[in-house]
Length: 329
Image (tube, rainbow, N blue to C red):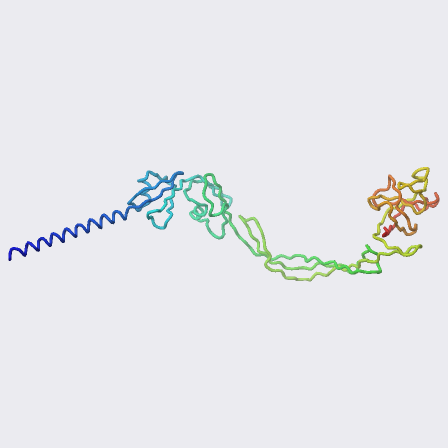
């Protein structure tokens, strides 16, 4: 009995040691399996998947045969490298950065304009990037870092006066009569000016204060559209001031026939049809009611030729400015 007990103790010890060894091997094997990761690599236009136990991206790239140059960079798709992560390699390319008139060309592996600007200390609220910060870097790209600034100024500006028209039935239609001259006012304008690289790009009005109010210009505007003649009251459409001459019925043709085919006589006037259409009735103070029924080579624009009955009357009339009422139908 005394010899059996030690043997049982030894057997138990060996069994425990064996179990401990198995657990250790199992833990090591399991940990080894857990440490194995599948990592995606995007580089030089290609994609490959590698199985690795490394956690350092540089080691993984080196084992995959991806060699990084001095300015090349990479980015990992996840905060920490795990199975399924993607390592993207960005090869350095030449870019030109222009800032405050200075142009500098160098190689960079930064993936975006914003990251490059940040590395140069240019990513801030007072700098505008062209292209914008999210734009991907491309070989030969020119990047402008425009310095933004602003200032607030005050300036004096005129306030235009208004023109007030007062209808007046005592004045003929088309006649204007000044009642009171207008006067421009003065205002103080507070403006915020925005500059890009020292050149003003825009501005916005912050506040306006009237220093001196404007004074309106007052004009009486004629509304009366009737004229008194020896043959009663007639309504007119408009009034034209024209240069008038006189002619005899036979001046146009020996037969005294007008352009409209009717005989020339007193009360027939020659006009430019583009100004007064043929067939229009007119009234000319000092001459009377008339019909625009003739034309002439010298009658252009605001000119009118009045048919007279005698040479002496035509000579006395001569050439003068007349008021021509274009009558309504």
